[in-house]
Length: 350
Image (tube, rainbow, N blue to C red; front, side):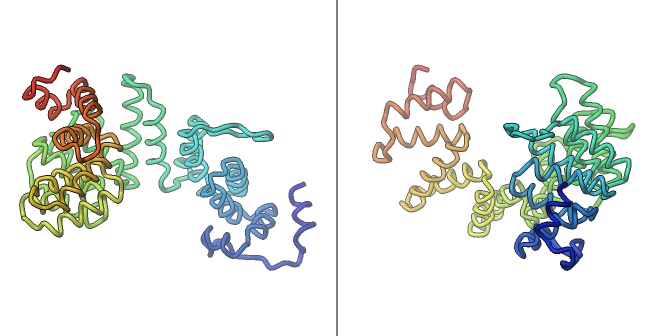
């Protein structure tokens, strides 16, 4: 029926396109979606997949689902991964079923599709399966935890997936047998780190573990590499290092601002503290107020406390005294160290 309808719209003699050579965006920009639909309805799985990708980017679940299914039916195994990812992403959002929708987002369906992709050796399906298992795992269920880590282990070994390697490194720290594989903690971490080329997530994970004293080593190469790759945690850690240790203020601030543009809350709070320490510079004080407000709005309780304290000490900042005290009391109840210290020093009743 669909083919007949499209045939009425498009001439049978129209140009046959090689959609495998085109990105989905190019098809959209050149207004070739109709031609793609025509070819997809005539059994072109690549046209169906590209059409589905356009709908997926537009957050149109059901049309994307329909065309990915067409692609899978046409023998395009890559679409198994894309369809599984579509279900995985949309299952995390509120979804209202529309009239005539025959499929709705479902994590079990996503897991089934990812498993089929693994059978067909589709790259990326192992790591996607691990992420789906993480999503559906029930808190406290050790069986779910083991299945998740086993999936991450396979993704790290066979796909050299950066996220999976990071998970396995953290699992080594937690002394999980699946991750240790009979090795010492240090040897196991080194093993997972070397399962592929250096990558941002596993590198920044190593930097954090070294800085926390969980393992020995030099964190600088890891945080520097992650920063060079644009990872927000790497930008924050290396920027902080440049300011505090190497005293390269300008370069450090530049990296922190890049992290802030990626919504890194700790970077906002740290830069706010640094600017607030420049007590003789009114511009820095003004920027500190702005940064504290931004970090507070994003949920950083330490920044929220300092914002309230600064507002209490200087009413010209425009925060009412009662509001400041209310914020400090709320942060005390949530055991924020700076709030507890302020309340103790000033005998504030919590």
